[in-house]
Amino acid sequence: MAVISSPKPHIFVIPGAYHPGSTFNLFIQSLEAAGFSAETTTNRSAGNAGITVQDDVTHVQSLLIPQMDEGKEIVVVAHSYGGVVGSGVIAGLDKRGREARGLKGGIIGIICIAALMTAPDKSILDMRSGGALSPWVDTSKLETEGVTYTRNQMETFYHDVSPELAQTMIASLTSQSALSVQSKPAAVGWLDNVYDGRRAYIRCLQDGALPLAAQDGLLAQSGVEWIIKSLDASHSPYLSMPDELTSVVAEIIAEFATS
Image 1: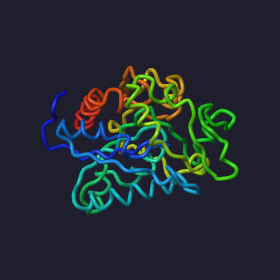
Image 2: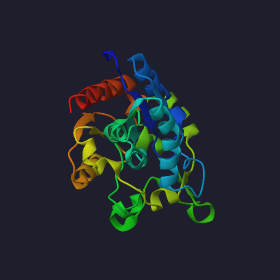
Image 3: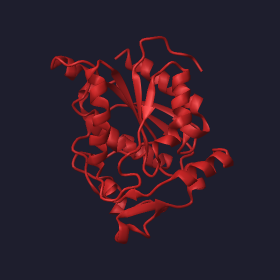
């Protein structure tokens, strides 16, 4: 794994649904070993009812904007549901736009990992055929508590992860606010041409949660060009191959620098 020469952007990782930020610790450590500063958070919608996707967007922006005001250049790395959150987060916060307004720092790009996407004025459910949830989503508490859970987690998320680590991850999973997939983000930031050459998507070829055909379908529907990379991984390369994922992220960031 190559260490990238300075200066390096700060990397902010947005988790997917049901997953606390701690599930990305191995990946954060790998990024740091490669010379990046990196952090993550837990989405407000993980473990809480009544939280919209825009609530998650606002939460992440509240963490990033003070860092940008200090001059940090940031790459958002967004996994799964986090792709929709990340798309909202980056809207209006690009480095070039902030510079034009006399502000320091900003977002220099977004990297999506097996991520969901929405179109303008569409929720995640709106983007799904028939508006149905995935078969691995447990809806038994949807009507009574306003949350969903997961089932068949090993096959869905972690089939290439060591059994011991996978069981630890399964034990850490939370509920997910139903509103997070029923609500619409205020913006789809990666549509802005300021992110041309600075939006990337890492396909996960063995994904059980968001199958490869679905990933490719979302890319085709997006209407914009992406830097596209692939990993022969499950939905969770940040657990099964964190160093390989870091290398791909570093490669993408190097490509961002040329645009």
